[in-house]
Amino acid sequence: GAVVSQHPSWVICKSGTSVKIECRSLDFQATTMFWYRQFPKQSLMLMATSNEGSKATYEQGVEKDKFLINHASLTLSTLTVTSAHPEDSSFYICSARDRLSPSYEQYFGPGTRLTVT
Amino acid sequence: GESVGLHLPTLSVQEGDNSIINCAYSNSASDYFIWYKQESGKGPQFIIDIRSNMDKRQGQRVTVLLNKTVKHLSLQIAATQPGDSAVYFCAENIESRDDKIIFGKGTRLHILP
Image (tube, rainbow over all chains, first blue to last red):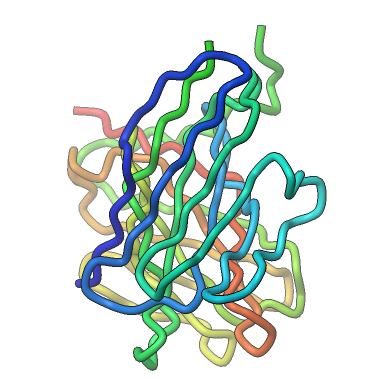
């Protein structure tokens, strides 16, 4: 099946610094990718839709200047958490849909654990 | 401490028994529904999906039932095995609008030996 990877799998950073997380579709092209955040013992919350070649669209309540999304190619989207604070510590997960597939199945990455100290 | 609302509901099932996990979805306009399995520290894994023009779909050891009248989904797992221990999420989408998948709250499935 289709594979989505994320890098890094975990990261620890100091408060006030920025962290970049990559999401790659390994064997398919994705015009649209999605970024989710998951706090412990909670569900996945959709943060934004990453669109190849255009601006991301953010869900209500998600600060676009804090969570910068860049979808520069059909296989790569990046999420940058700027000026990270401890409350940004979370599990960040991306997903992508194969634009050439008739199926609407989305493929999820393995997640990135961010800890801000 | 944590509030009750932050804890995932847990379903404990004897190994070999059938499991039924329920979900109430929120949007009556949703027309595509998916069940995901998430193991600790990993991303969600697709289990089975169903479109709103169906009320039942079967896979290998799993069955999804959809009741649009009461906006209810269920996932049935036959002959539950230790490897089925995970958190299960239902998710919904409006296919005609966009690809956004919105997740429900989740249920932790605990297998008793």
